[in-house]
Image 1 (cartoon, rainbow, N blue to C red):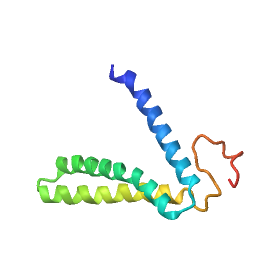
Image 2 (spheres, rainbow, N blue to C red):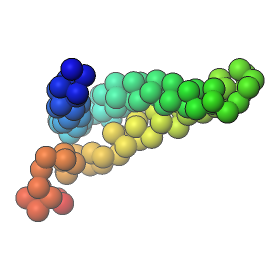
Image 3 (cartoon, rainbow, N blue to C red):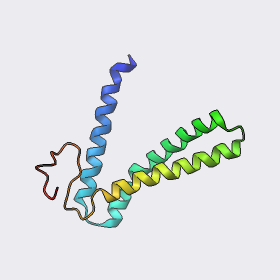
Image 4 (cartoon, rainbow, N blue to C red):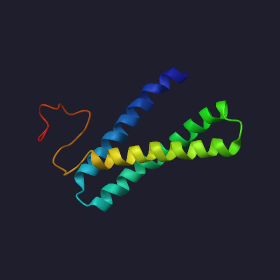
Length: 108
């Protein structure tokens, strides 16, 4: 039964990504764009934290080092998500949606 639910999660994730990119493209204010990007970077940072923590628990016996590696992973993944979300809409001239054909996108 779990495999039957996976397409819905994939569709929901794609729609959320598209909505976030449209929202970032719609606003010109850098503060609003940064706030929207942080909405995506927060969950990404949590995912990076727990992914690296799981790997660190496999290979590092000291809990302090596990937490240190997990924090580094959270900063790396969250920071990358935030930078990509903010930078993807540089001047607001191009829309970097995965659903738009690059040949028809203005400014591409």
